[in-house]
Image (cartoon, rainbow, N blue to C red; front, side, top):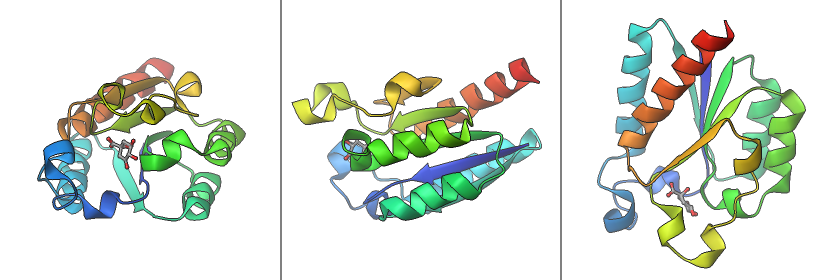
Length: 144
Ligand code: DQA
């Protein structure tokens, strides 16, 4: 079983980027934690962080993963192309945000992905990635 984990623009700055909003954990720490957790269930995590929309789209097109966990960063609020890529490959996915986007600026309250996602996790910081993994595993068990 393989899960593709995608992190969008500026998430490479985690740890020093507005830590009061996004926390102090770095992206490599978050990714290594969930990779280790997934390994316990024999699940392989493939990870890509990119600041470029087309790289995220290409990764979606090229993956043979069973499930996608995506933190699209600001592309959440702008990208019809990411939505179309996810619909195009028809791989079930979950949207995740570190911050509670609903408690922030109004422009963060619309997502181009949420209505076609299996679910959305937001506001739990780095812990949200663990919840996302759990939800993905449960989803994959149900559909197996
Ligand atoms: C984010 C929320 C987005 O609104 C923002 O543009 C990000 C990070 C989050 O994880 O909370 O870059 O996706």
